[in-house]
Image 1 (spheres, rainbow, N blue to C red):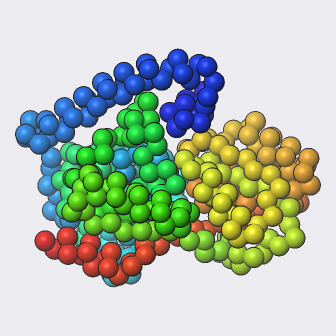
Image 2: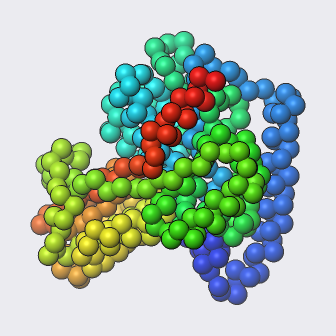
Image 3: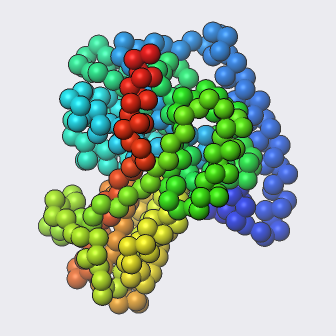
Length: 352
């Protein structure tokens, strides 16, 4: 049902029922717009108050429903602060705990403050921890904390969906909300042609003429092999061409599964079978049984998945039917083009 609904709002479903539902969804989108505008008005006029923290706050968010790369960008910025000798804290809602675990696994020096009430978590942290900066993942709509820098990410392969707000489309706010942002990062920019990228920039400039726009790519770094005697991804790395001659099943549960499969194709990974799931999918016994069935039917010798999915797929190691199958995790890093310009601009905004 969740996938069917998602197909309707992204225009991927053309069955009769979807045409009947869309007018109703458009009505709810209008009501949602009123709610969004009213909420912003209440904060802007001071009826709802935003708290100012003692340390700088950077928000990394989006205006669409999932798949824009905001969490990988957050991780990249956190890593930059760690390299500069600073102690950052991550404020996250905790709904997508798989992302939190990936960041905790990759960046051990970050205090991950997970919970629905980020305002309370931040106030407690600034009193009890020695911190230099707060990063708020998925924070563009979180108005109860004042931020020093607002960064918005947009997926180049699907920047605004069909242009409608939730639930008729994937927009969480109208496009003119981009005027609140200081910087915008177009992610997965290498997966579209220059003409489409130029069109996206023109669209953004039409809504927010002064915003700083940067491009970013999801760059594959290596594969991690997974040992059947360990619960976590091992430190043993494999080259990106290590799967030549294999028969691979690719598993992905992201908001934008196609990007993962495209990346594997660009790496010439011989994918025989693909299994895709919705974002934040919780793998259960029937899913694992399906994976084992696909492996057997297609003579699969290697399963490849994402870091985010691996957090939830560890039980695969316990299945006798997968005992002879190699399990690999693709490590991907978000890289901002002209990164030094990006971080200089970020520093300027923080100091201003």
